[in-house]
Structures are given as structure tokens and as C-alpha cells.
Length: 296
Ligand SMILES: C[S@@+](CC[C@H](N)C(=O)[O-])C[C@H]1O[C@@H](n2cnc3c(N)ncnc32)[C@H](O)[C@@H]1O
Image 1 (cartoon, helix red, strand yellow):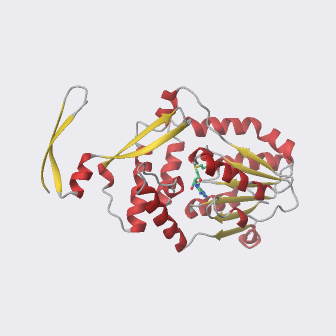
Image 2: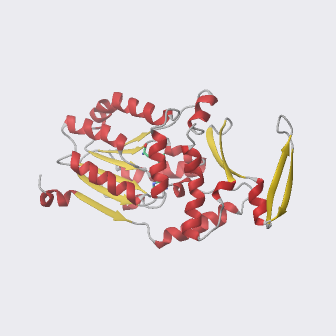
Image 3: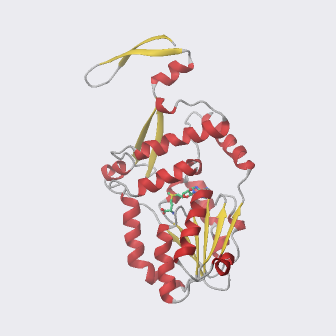
């Protein structure tokens, strides 16, 4: 099909602007002045963060992507048959790899009309939309560059066919219970009266399996985690020495979620105080440490 004919099949709208920088600034001010410091996970996904996440999805330890992909392959036809869906709306669509499984099932059932992807990362939405247009002849792709906690009302109305709204990749686990419920409540809007929600959730299992997935041997997840500080440095003109932070990820059995932390090494506190670490002494089990510092 010619470019001219395909030109109408893609639409990308952005609802993120300079207000995002304000949003990041507010989240950082609010999050880093709490006794337990935190920054919302959406700020991980600048262009580099999104690329690192794609790399994580292919790591041998990172079971969520391949296991969810296999389940989707097994159940996509049934989901489409049950829902009659001809439209897929994906919240936090990333590179849209899993969406293809559902789109293929819709194409097989002869219902496929439109794919609507909402994500904070403009680069991934654009490249995914280009690739989908190349691979699916009759598909309309609508990219919504926005925050699914704030911009669900920007998702267009269903186009006369039943709709499937998907939130995959265990993204729901990035939200504490109150925001999780808020997000699920918000998803009822784009669902419309006849739609169905398809939600991917990681399940509780042996903690060693979970923790290995977030502490990969190649250190890609650690880099993804530290990249958050680079986002803050670049966008807010901050000066975090990212190499002075250790990545730590562990399963919180009470909350049933993985905690991803950045632990400032002692060097960071010394550097902030105009000192530098000269020598570090510890015992065989690293139960206690003695450090020797000099003026920086
Ligand atoms: C864990 S990844 C999952 C990607 C893909 N759905 C998958 O299953 O592989 C989370 C995705 O959601 C996006 N995201 C995270 N928070 C978001 C938010 N508040 N609004 C929109 N997109 C968000 C990220 O940019 C990223 O692409």
C-alpha cells in the first residue's frame, strides 16, 4: 500500500509538555523529602530508560516477559472470541510486542480495526507505531503520549466495535494500593460499556526467582535504576553522582511486591560534605565498617 494511502492510518497526539518537568520536579521534591524516599516509576522511562527496559525483557533471569508472552499466545484467540474485540487499547504500551499477539488474533478473527497505545515515552510510541503500520495493512494506529494516571480521558471513544483494554507487563504492581485502585477505576472510562480489561500480574513465588529477575548478572536492571538519577540530573539540573549509588532489589513479602532501591554509598555523603573516602576497613562478615576520609 502506498505511503499516501497509509498516511491517514496513524495519529500521534502528545499530552505531555513542559508541565511534565513541573510534574517531575514536584514528584522529586515531594518524594525525596519523605523519610522513606521514593520517585514514581513513570520517570524511569525516558528514551534511555525505555531502551534499557527492552533489554531487561530479553534477559535470561527476567521471566515476566517470556512467561506473559507465552500465556498471551495460548489465550489470545479465546480472549478475542469471548470479547469480539476489534480495538485494542494498551496502557503503558512500551514497544507493543505483546500487543502484536492480540492484534494477530483479532486479524485472524477478522475483527481488527484499531490499536490505541498510551505511554509516557514518546520515542517508543513513535517507533512502535511505525513498525505496526509496516506490518499490518489495514490497521489504524493511534498513539497517545501521556500519563495513564492523568490522561485516560484523552483516549478516543470506541469506534463501534468491542474494545479490549490491556495493562500488561506487571505494570500494575508499580502502584501502591490506593493508586492501583484509582488506575483500575480510571480504566472503566476507556473500557466503555462493552469492553473488557486484560491485566497482567506477576504472581507470588519462590523469592529467589523474583529477586534474580531484578538483580540480573549483566547489571542492566541496576543501570535502569540508576538512569532515574540521570533523568533527574538532566531535567532538573541536579548533580547526583550516579556511580555513588548501589542498586538493591528485594521482594517485600508483606506487600507482595518487589522493592527497587538506590542505596547511596558512603562516598556520596562524604562528597556532599567536601570529603573523600581514602580507605575502607571491615571485618570478615562486613558487619561494621571503619572509613578513613580526607578533604576532597
Ligand atoms: C513495565 S513496562 C511494560 C511495557 C509493555 N506493556 C510490556 O508488557 O512489555 C511499563 C510501560 O509503561 C509505561 N508507563 C509507566 N508509567 C506510565 C504512566 N503513568 N503513564 C503512561 N505510561 C506509563 C512505561 O513507559 C513503559 O513503557
